[in-house]
Amino acid sequence: MKQGKDVENPESRFFAVLLAAAKLPGVRIQREAYLRSALARHCSEDDIRRAVEETPAAAGIAAEILDKAANDSIRYETAKVSALSAAAGIPGVLALPATVPADTAQYVGHMLRIAQKLAYLYSWPDLFSEEGEDTDDATKAVLTLFFGVMVGTKSANTAVGKVAGLMSEQVAKKLPQKALTQGVVYPIVKKVAAYLGVQMTKETFAKSVAKAIPLVGAAVSGTLTFATYLPMAKRLKKHLADLPLAEPSHRVSDGDDVIDGDVVEEYESFSEATAGELEKPISRSKNAGKSSPRS
Image 1: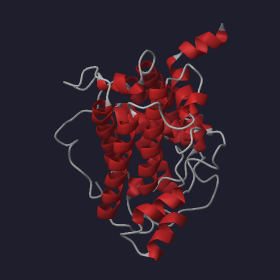
Image 2: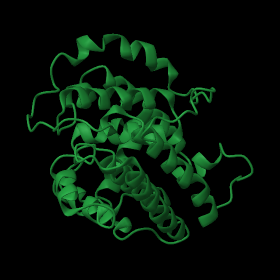
Image 3: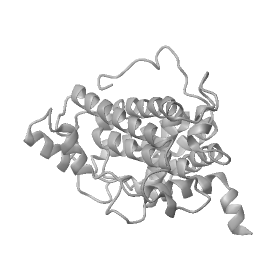
């Protein structure tokens, strides 16, 4: 009975799909290989080497180059996921549990692919270790927040900004484990996961997200996928490009614990201010449309 309740729980359902998709062949992006490929035509070997060893921001890669590389990756992934939307799914999908539909798995897999690519371009650390290893809790949390940004949840935007701010201040190479798994960001992760889980309870993720887009309706086709995936990828790109982590900065630190200090105390008011904002759409005020120098 407990297992049945877990399956019905939206938060658990989302995490199950996320973790299953992360294990599929081709979903995990190798950070070094991707950055070398994406920057090869635009940067010197020395700049690429520093971008790989540290971050593109530390290497001083121009915003225009990162923007072009990001757009190229978005176009590639959008075309790929659209073509696959009418197919059986990406290789290995038949090995998934029956509770994870093929269309949902391949769609989430491609959301993971573009999230990693954009994160690496905009100076986030390597999100996965070796191929086949389990996804750790901090990576699971930050990917959940990225998905929240993609679908337009206000609290996910705020939480990603807080995490990026912590990393930027401490010039560290690793995700802030405590903030994402124990601190004030974690309740937001759970709320975002529950919200996303609701969207995939009865239908595929692509169909449920498409309901919010006027004139698209319930059509099941590559066109539908294109109409949902492309704006979500662009939304994540804009948000990551505007964060302080993407700004040119000093060299990153190799320390394992530099950002695991008194995170809860420093940002104690954060969860209280944002926990109730999950399902509110991002406001489109006059100021919200303004881009930072790196957008």
